[in-house]
Structure formats: structure tokens, C-alpha cells
Amino acid sequence: MKKAFILLLISVITISSTYALVHFVKNDTFSFAWILNFMLMICIPFFTQTLKSPLRSGYFNERTWERGGKIYERFGINLFRKILVWIGWEKLLRKANPVEKNNEALAKLHYQTKMSELNHLIIFFIVLGFNVFVAFKYGVTKSLSLLLLNIILHAYPIFLQRYNRPRLERILKLSKRSPVTDVPT
Image (cartoon, rainbow, N blue to C red; front, side):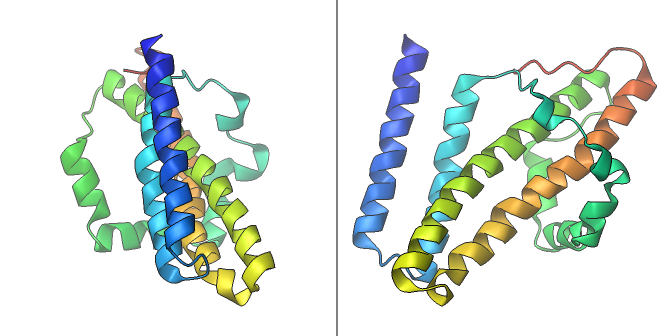
């Protein structure tokens, strides 16, 4: 009952904040796109973390066309990774969540890659809906800030998680001490 109430509360806060943003900020501006993305990046993780899903869907498995990560390398994932290091995101992330060299920590990191991907995927589709709306109402050029931020802030992080997760799985399999466990903590 408490979990359902918290999920409802997070949903109401997210929807009402989004409504206020749509109502008070002009929808075809960069500031609208920026605020929408970051507001959703605050709200959506609260929702998914409250759910504590084991994330065992086949969606999270590596596809044959993804093997080796070559497709993501063609899309510039290595440049994106360098940019994350350059702006200090990796240092900030590792300071908050240091990675230990044991199976339990690697399994937790494996789960976090799925959770991060899920969060970015949900936000990607919400922002894409706003992107289509703004494109029809104000024109395609007015919706470019939504599209650009959606690609940078959500599509590339999804690519990054899908690029890194198979490597983590190989490390966990090589250790042979324990199988990959996707149990939320």
C-alpha cells in the first residue's frame, strides 16, 4: 500500500510539474527543452527505483547486431565517453558510486546499467512525444532543441549502457564465482 501511494505521488508530481512547465514556458524554446529533460531526469528515477523491478526482460540482452559494440562505435560512442570524462561526469559518478573489484559490486553495476537505460528510455519517449507535438504546432525548426537534447541526453546514454553491459557480463562470467544476479538493492 505504501509503495502504491509513493508511486502515485511521484506520478502526480511529475504530471503536475510537466503541466506547469507546458503552461508557463513557451514550448518551442531551448529553455523548455532543457527544463523538461532535467525535470524528467529527476522524477523518473524516483519512480523506477520505487518499483524495484528485477529488470530481467529480454530487451536488456545483447542483440546479434550489437555484438562487439561496432554499431555504437560508428555512432561515436567513444567520443561521447571522452566528452563525459572531459566534463567531469565520470569522476563525479565514480566519486558517488565507486566500483569495487568484487562480483557483488559488478553485479550491482550490471543492474544499474539496466536501470539507467530504462530511465533514459522512458524519458526519451516522453520527450519524443513533446518533440512531435512541437514540430506539428510550431514547425520542425522550433522542435530541433528538443530533438538535439533528446539525442545527447538520452539516446547516447542508452547506447552507452548497451555498449558497456556486455563487457560487464563477460567479466562476471570470467570470474565464475557467482552468476550475474539482478537483484535490486
